[in-house]
Each structure stands twice: as C-alpha cells, then as structure tokens.
Length: 359
Image: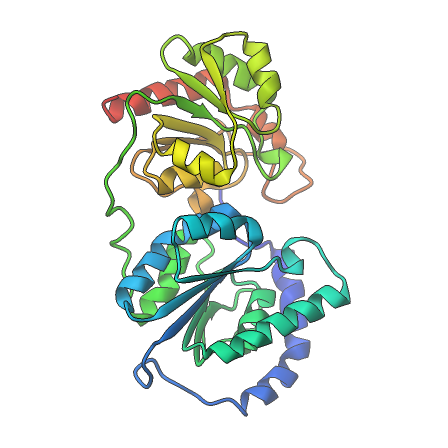
C-alpha cells in the first residue's frame, strides 16, 4: 500500500496555475525585504493548519517544539472553527485564530475568497517574524504570503515556491508529523519531544468505541461493530460515543453493560483521558486518544497509515489483509477495503495491545 499526499493530477493542475500566476507574485516580491533567521529576534510565529481536528492534533508536538525553541515568542495558530475550540482547551498556542477557508469546504464563491484575502492581509499588522505551512498546498501558501511574514517555510509540492522565503521539497512518503518536523528542523527544532509524556490510562476505565469518520468510506460497517462489541463485552467494560449510529448500535447489542457517552468535544476530551483504550477508524478521535496518551486501535482501509496514523507508543493500526484492487471513486479511500477488516482480527489486536500495556 504505497500512497502519496497528492495525486499526480492534482500536482499537474496546481503547478500549471502556479506557472501562470508566478510573474505577478515574483514581481511583488521585489518590493519585500529579505531576512535570515540570524538577522532578527523571533517575537511572533504563525502556524497554519486549516483542515480537520485530527490534522491539528498531529502537529501538536511541532507546536510544543516551537515553543521550546522560542520560549519568548508569541505563537499564533490558525485553524478551522471546529479545531479551534479543542486547540484552545489543550492550550496548543498562545493565540488561536479560527478560520474556515473556502478550499477545504468546496466553497468557490468569489466573495468568500475575497474575504479570506482580506483576513490574511490583516495579519500583516501582527508583524509575523516566522511562519510555517506544512501542507504543500498552493492555496495555503498564497494565504501565508498575504500575511507578510519576514521568514516563511513551506512545501512547494503543488507549486508556489515564490510564496515562501524558504520553499522546500516534500517527501510525500513521510508521515504528516515528520513532514512538519522537517520544516521546523530548519530553525533548530528537534523530533525528540514526541514521546516525552508518560502514558496515563485508567485500568478501571472502559474500552471506548467511536464509530464516526469524516468520510463514509473511512467508516467500518455497522454489523462489524456489533460483532466486535459482542466479542469484547464479556472481558471489558464498553462505552460507545454518541455519534452517527451509536444509539442503534447500543440497541442492537442489547446489553445493559454497554454504556453510551454523550457530551460535546471538550467533555469528550476530559472523559476520554480516564478510559482504558479507544477503537476508531482513521479520525479525530484516534488522534485525540494518542494526544491524551490513551492506547488506541485505529482501522485503516485503503489509505496508507504510514502517512496519517496516530503517532503513539501504545498504538495499533489494523489494515486489510490484501492490497486494494477495487474500483474506486477516490484515489485514497475505498469502502470495500474497510469492509474486509474482520471483527475477529480487530478483537485479537485489542487483546494483544491490552496484554502489551499490562492491563
């Protein structure tokens, strides 16, 4: 299962667009001052991550590393509104600015793009000394350029190298976290902070089932969840998070020992930190469990876990037995691959993981 971050078609189209707009932005760059990291005192750092909550959680070790390297600097994180609430609760940055950009929500209105342009330019008043974007998306790069940072780092995978003072080539076979660390390593940040915190799970807590995923093709079939819970319920306490078909799942299992958790994202975070283990598809919940140092079992279908799996010591990724050979509508997601992961395989993986962590 070998995948890359961007499809070939996406790269070709984006680089064509980059080629046609490059003369205009290269001309404007002549009127901007050039700085080196040794020339200025870093007082304000900007990091952008507009995508999902899980993406923000993945780069959280990088944010910590930046704060260690520049303890006196003011760290600003721009993320979407859903992620902003959790990022504030977890204190991931000194200032968190929430923004839903049109290209992550399929919004193509000229008015929404003009509004985003105005908001990006308003950041120039903050005198950004150092800025990072980890995605390699030319639209992200354009936004960062508009904030007028003195020094900026980003990937030019889809073009737009002129939007960064320090563009870099992306290794698309690396995990998302390590790609981010490759950028910040240019200013002296290190990877060694990733596993610094101790694991703090509750032996008396529940095995938590979170069936939700942002795309149905990442979801595991309902009847598989039913069978897995029936396998687990005699050995472990089970709690199901109230998302999607959770109520139907509890009803189908018909066991009073299986509980359901109801609460918002912040309440879920506090509650999850006192549980035994989480089982989920590739989703925000899996990355949150890893952040909280809770053992986590993540189900991956056709997508490559090497790129986005939770980075955690007590983590297990369950994948199909064979490489995807199905006809797909999406180049990275396949519901048939998720269907092929058997409940017995997941159950055995959970039992092995629990034994490994001496629970």
